[in-house]
Image (cartoon, rainbow, N blue to C red; front, side):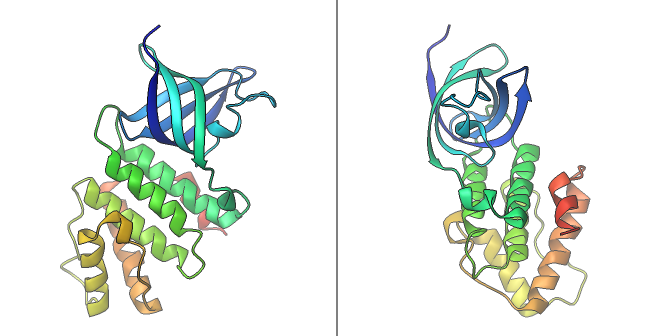
Amino acid sequence: MQELVNVTAIVLNSSPIGEYDRRVVLLTKERGKITAFAKGARRQTSKLMAATNLFAFGEFKLYPGRNSYTMTDAQIQNYFEELRIDFEGAYYGMFFLEVCDYYTRENNDEKEFLKLVYQSLKALSVKSLNRKLVQCIFEMKAMVINGEFPGIPAEGNWQESTEYAVSYIMSSSIEKLYTFTVSETVLSELIRIAERYRYHYIDREFKSLEMLSVL
């Protein structure tokens, strides 16, 4: 067996395998998006049970295999438990995870996506922030990181504040993204822009968005 590796990561996806195991998709700082198997993680006594849940962020110990990894231990720094007890917040968070799963690849440098999803999940718990605004900021910045966000659409009579907000999202560091609020008019324009580009650039339907649309 190869040497144990340590990664800083967040759980993007978690699914049951067999009777007691779990398969997880991790977005890591060191190795991009990877798949890992946690043996016995669904047993009530397993030390990996909580660490293999969605949103779990921390340090994971893994043995690399040919096409996947085996998780042996984890030190979780943030479970985002506030989202687990918040039905709407959980679906916003799951949407962020789905988008990261769509964009990221194994062995790519995905540090910016990891920072973005972590800061965005934290922003969902800030009561003064409108979650639709958090979603718009997240979507636009994800496209910026992926190198495909073209900026404010040329067609359309946009508010000056909308143009400023889009410019700020494009140029701001991830740590400073969620430091502003907007009027309802500007928010509605940001939603239109984010939706327009999502439909244009992303060829996937997101289950979490379908659920949010009926909440």
